[in-house]
Length: 74
Figure 1 (cartoon, one colour):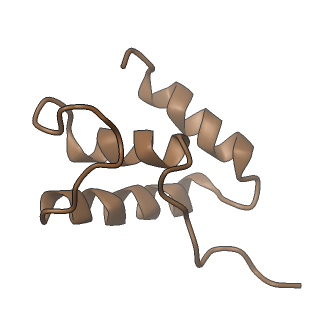
Figure 2: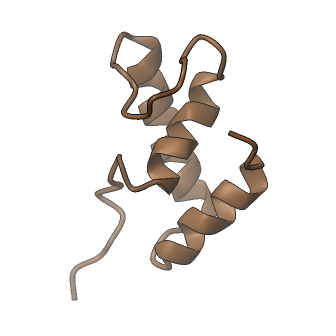
């Protein structure tokens, strides 16, 4: 995967206008923690070659992991 982290971040934020960078960073950190603690990746890439935070951001950007808990109901 040759997509830069900045491009992935922009893709996620564009697709989720209710999120800000802080909320996205919390979601990435939570997913990265899950990956470090044994969760399997939802992407077909070698998790050993990619940092958990980068892998988490890629999963979120591809829509494989949803972000919940930040959207206020109106």
